[in-house]
Length: 84
Image (tube, helix red, strand yellow):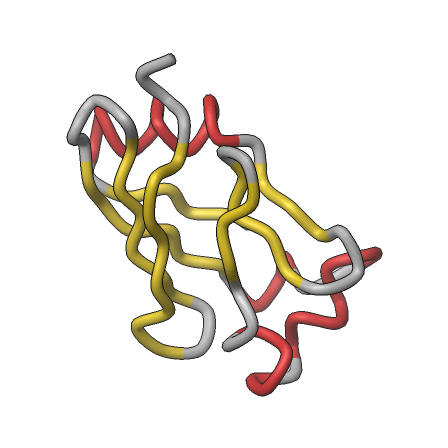
C-alpha cells in the first residue's frame, strides 16, 4: 500500500522525517499539547529518539505507534503532519 512507512528518522525532539512506499516524504511534528495519555512518555527526548519502523508503522518502545494512513494523507496535502 502507498501509505506503508519505509523509513523514519528523528530530526529533533518532537519532529521526525518519514518516507512512504510510494516515495512520498515529509515530516511529522508533535506539538507539546499532544504529549498526553500513552504519548506522555515521548516528552522524554531519550525515549523519543528510540523511534523505529516495524512492519509499516512508526513506533516507539512500549508499543506506541502512529497511524501511517493519516500521516500519509496530511503529508500529501501539506508536507507535514502536525499532531496536537
